[in-house]
Length: 178
Image 1 (cartoon, helix red, strand yellow):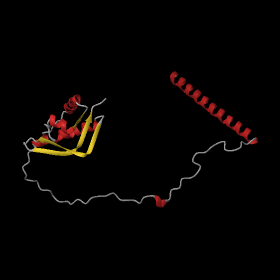
Image 2 (cartoon, one colour; image 1 turned 180 degrees about the horizontal axis):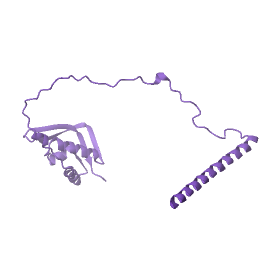
Image 3 (tube, rainbow, N blue to C red; image 1 turned 45 degrees about the vertical axis):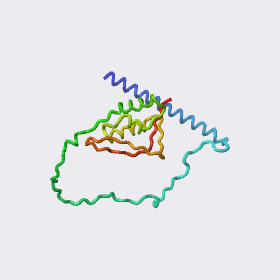
Image 4 (tube, rainbow, N blue to C red; image 1 turned 90 degrees about the vertical axis):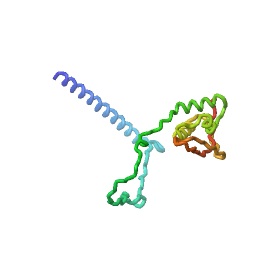
């Protein structure tokens, strides 16, 4: 009870001090206004922001458009009879980006610049297109990369079934830092 009484008294004192400060500020404003009434200052002495109204005409607004609801036919779907190997869905390829980055750095130790095609030629793709996409992503993140759109490179790899695949892309030149 004693603690709550002290807390109440503290808050009352604080509120009284805040009200007192507000009243002092208002009295100062009132005194200055009365002083200015006798001798008005020339020119603008109190700028106002946004002294004009923002006009927004009704015809400037867009008309209501109901949301698009596609028509979906209520046809019963039949179960397919195709034989699908579902193990393919779970066989995911993991590309080691750190190894690819090491390959790029290894090639740049010997020369000041190397093309992505040369890196792939010296370090053949083992994971196919996924590995090529990872190389392209690393090239995009590389600090000093130049793309020559006028020259195309052929990148080849063997798929898991033994088929030779080929991708054509612009020459991507990786430059050594420093």
